[in-house]
Length: 299
Image (cartoon, rainbow, N blue to C red; front, top):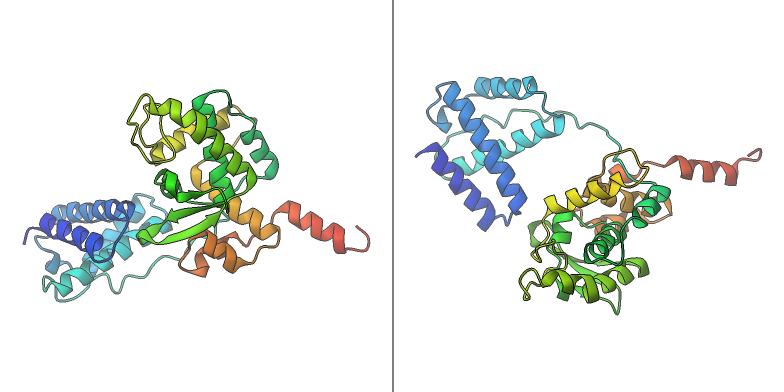
């Protein structure tokens, strides 16, 4: 069977049977297409003809491109899953990626924003404009809940419960969870939805049920959120680059710094494995100073 057709069948399998997100589907399809290009360069005509030595050569090309360990691991995991699918469909007899070892994970501490930096961000938006109200609600909600940018963009009006202060979030694999939000996020959301959002709807579709809209009155995209945050950070004295996940990092770090237990933070973030949450168990300089001052007799 044509290699590109097999790639499409695998993507359909992930979508229908594994309920994978659109992000995962696009990422895996791109990786397999890159591997197909490698096969064409090596004059390998079928997936069943790929050997372990071919896999090692492919991984060498990834390292030559200076891909991060995380990206290389993603390539291996994707192609390993792809070959399991090919074996199930009797297209390949064995899995040449089964012996490929995943690179050791880089122990990087997630970049987060300090409270002083967040206060600067929260004071930037012009609350007398529709876009300013939207930006404020966006910032407050991302930090108050720690939700992913895709989850934020897909949030619907009916997902917000102001009475008990929670939102219903649909995460990876369409798994749903309730996440609470505080009074600052609640006030910012109500102001935006009752005023600014209605003004934005004039330019678009009045039946749009997504919470966050762009200036055209249609659903805001994750890329649009990144652009908004980049423009906001330029108006502050903060020197680092910002991305939506940084607010998620800040949410988790500040919760743990203030005594929240890791299992609760795991549930709030929507992590399937505790190991994903453990990257936030680093301590900030501020917390170290507080511990030192509170417990050292000569502080």
